[in-house]
Image 1 (cartoon, rainbow, N blue to C red):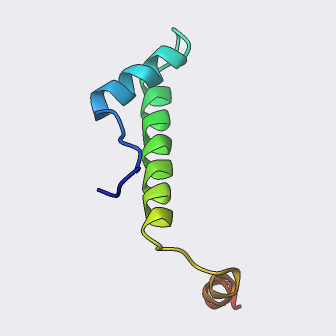
Image 2: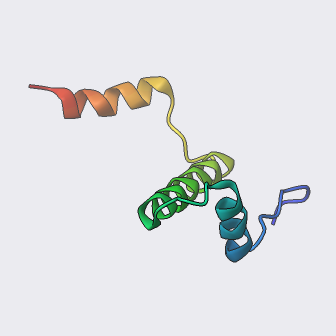
Image 3: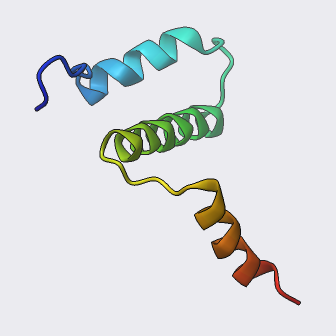
Length: 69
């Protein structure tokens, strides 16, 4: 672990905090969605911290391959 790096609370604690922020009538689907989004955000932040990013030019080049007719 890097010196000064933030330590995330355990997963169960993160879910408890998320549940506390959701309305009482949240469905299981709502809860699953929020957990999924949180996980994707955390993964993206980890990628940024590890230097796994693309420049705008690299991104445009990749997307151009997908968007060609």
